[in-house]
Length: 482
Image (cartoon, rainbow, N blue to C red):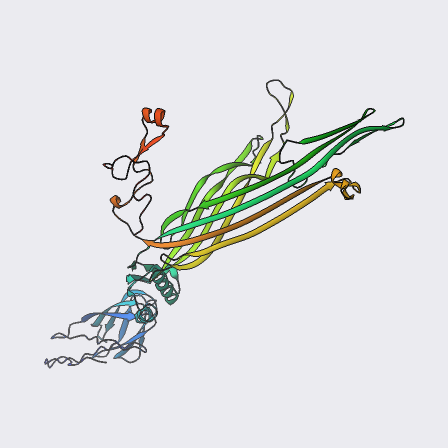
């Protein structure tokens, strides 16, 4: 491409041409117009990185000066034609002089990345977005609108791969859709336990002739560890002659039912993590310092929830969820015996008290799922049945038919568990404060007369303070989804 300008002055040349041509890409014309006379010309041009432009002069040039050859390299092909190569992002200038030392042309050159290819990628891979790309030195700034956070992350990754360094990409994209996600988790568990114990302990004192015998058996319950109850039934028989026979019978059964229901709810913005814990922390000895003092760390327990939502667009939500329901338990607890130390007051050796560290009964699940807004899925489930049985007794005697029951004890335990974890995400937005209700709305303490005569601890009103007194909560309680 070229531009041609004519001048009527007879003492001056009538042609000046500047052509800017990029390797493999056609750009708009760029020309320089010569004023009447032979004065030097000054122009500004933009040059793409790693591409070239051709400068054609109306007169022969003898010297070409580039202030920063690292940014732009000038290759003089002929006295009137020079190639400028963009080697590095930045700004510089170039000067052209004739054989008399007079300045012919001054160029202000800015070298930037060619972003036409990047814009074409955005149009192809993110058609729903309106992304604008600008270059600042060697960096790229992304602006405009995208439908979701996932699209914004994709645009940033594409730009980072295009540049070759993600630190050179600055994202100022605006997400159009809803970005706040409320996660509702329901942990429902049913446990049924059954324990049976049947044992006979005998004690006999008798004599045969001049030889006296004393027989005693105490069969333990090795499965549960101890009798379910301290009560016992005793059968005694005294035939006479000083002989005595006693039998302690333990026949016990215990049935237990446990229902656990936890519903933690948590809200977070797309792409950000959120954590929730309703419970407590219990101390656990970890080590000792140089003075012998015990260093204690605290371990959390209770209902915990952590999740990271990513809105993918069109109501699709990707969730990385971890939920936990834990409680203190004596089963598996650890007891640390107390040591012997010198009492500083009396100077005598003293036995220290022991420490019992409770165990935790934990139901935990962690996974990544993808759901629509308002859709539910079973994140985790468990169906477990455990049966254990022990028989303890005197070898040989416990295997006798019928009479063997007098020399043995039976311990039986059965446990059944069913656990389900359900997750439901919602896209939510802010609402007016007046549209929300709290569980404490409408609560009022009972008067002394109501407490004394009616046995009430509180007087309950409706959500509307003007409503008459009622005995139950009225209206919505909790929160409202938008």
